[in-house]
Length: 303
Ligand SMILES: *Cc1c(COP(=O)(O)O)cnc(C)c1O
Ligand code: SF4
Image (tube, rainbow, N blue to C red; front, side):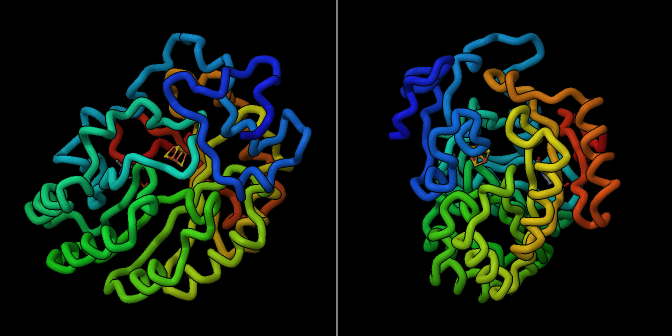
């Protein structure tokens, strides 16, 4: 598809158990002929994924232990997270859920019934987070069904959607989806996922503008990735570009130590130095919080 499988060090396009997958529009934002392109590096399988590195495991963040019901992860106070969908429009090579057993554990599978039942029993949950996989990989009718179920839960006042689709496939932010969001009687937050300013183009700007017009607050989370965004200039440009699109930087995640992703890791000392560099040149609201997810913790851990 990319005509790049001849590059040294790449796996044959077939994968490493996690297929290469990338929308055409995202490919179009790559710099052609540049093997170090930061968008390409996020999606192209590398031989290094086959290395077994000590400390890099299948379930890096304790998700399997935190399953509260079918497709529900309930680790933090007041927020329950639904594994709404097992699929994504893009397969990011560093993905912390590349080994997650989605087939058996997706909340949408049983018409959301078990997930909603879990919420009904817990009055402390005021925010429902749709994650995945990518929840916007679900059809809009499927999301509407969830919206109807949520309407019966008075304690849930916020819906948060974690999605990479507005960035990698902005066409997904279509009129029916926007109509659903606009009509939802909840506060709405969408946490996008972009790692490099080059991922944002006019199509992404338009999708963000339409989401905001539908009453959705926009935040962004990134993963700190060696060779992709581990430079102060690159991170500063990302924050500025996000803000130009109406999106506030939220988290910069230290990589989850998932098997096959070790070649993307940036050590904690460098990560802190990068954030200090950002702090010295950007307004505070454009500096994302540098965090790591630690299995068993009650919140993301600041570094
Ligand atoms: C990251 C995460 C959340 C959200 O955490 P915030 O700090 O509120 O963004 C909620 N539940 C789970 C299981 C998570 O992994
Ligand atoms: S979009 Fe998110 S969940 Fe999907 S592969 Fe990329 S990082 Fe993983």
